[in-house]
Length: 218
Image (cartoon, rainbow, N blue to C red; front, side, top):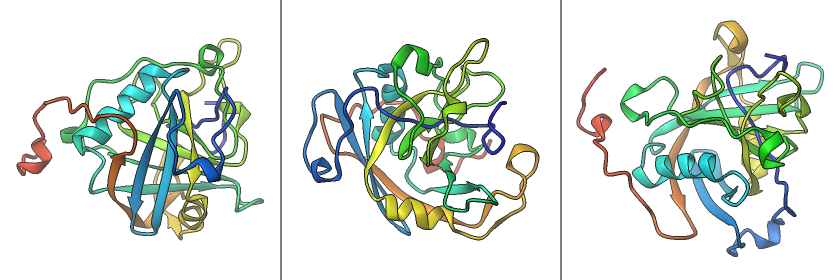
């Protein structure tokens, strides 16, 4: 991993002209908006279905199935020298009950989407094709997450159009614990991700079993 505070995730920025905060309440061609309601306030994302169709479809499957509902933002990776710079990470964590099949990486060299301030990106492990239901939101530009020679990078697939004040509050939470690349970055009292809901288009649930609702433990 080339990014010192990143390691299991990715973040985004749009290749096309970004949606402004004033447009957060309006549909934009090629974009799908998603509202994330957290215990610290709402965040509205605009996902670039035109340039990152596979990654966007993967995220929307988690949204439409309710797989993100009741999860958390659990990581605040901020710079010690610039505490307003970094990213927050949330999603299903290691809960295999909520997990769908991994999505192949759509690198920034293919999508043209860069990791800039407000970008949304998918987390992945050592295998770049292992992204499932964890994602990150950038505060500040993170060009080291973009694809490069012999480096796949992460799949940026959208950006925040409203609610960056919520993102900043989450980044500032007390942190500690963790191990490896996440050492010292785990939010001590994770922020609840109450629900995620599609604002544009028609929901397309996968129809797959939802074992976490049945009390099934893996």
